[in-house]
Amino acid sequence: MSNSESSLTIGKSLFISVIVLGIFLAYVLFLTRSVSPLSTAQETDSSTRSFEMLSVVLGLLAGGCMAGYFSFDYSRVNIKYKKGALLISWLFVSSIYLLMFLIMYALRRAGALQIIDGWARALLFLATYAFLDGLILFERWKMGQFKQGE
Image (cartoon, rainbow, N blue to C red):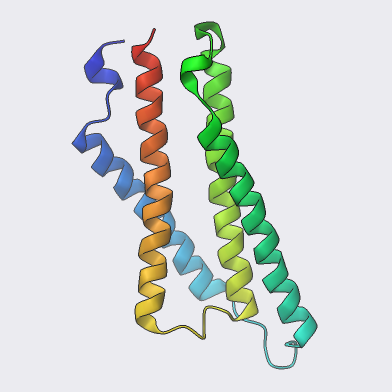
């Protein structure tokens, strides 16, 4: 594979970033329209606490996935195991995405996102988007490095 095919260019990076933004916006719209915080009739200390604890546990799982992902080193993988290595790496990335979405769901359901100001919500959106976009771009860059070693 040639260098131009495997390298991550500015154009490819922007294209990937737009796709990630579209997916993330769709999820945020889904959360905003389809998931409502617990009503006052349902809201008790135990139910709200359960959703908060769920988000903490999901955060720990996401942290574990990130630790596994960032400790994964393509340079130590034999070339004949390349497809398996890519599968494992993308499974980590997919798990991190799904866990982040579930954390946001649990926080929304617990009503934790209602108590923050609009500017803080915008910062939360930007920070989460930057993290998820950076994760995908980093993976694509790592894949390019792996392919150049063939």
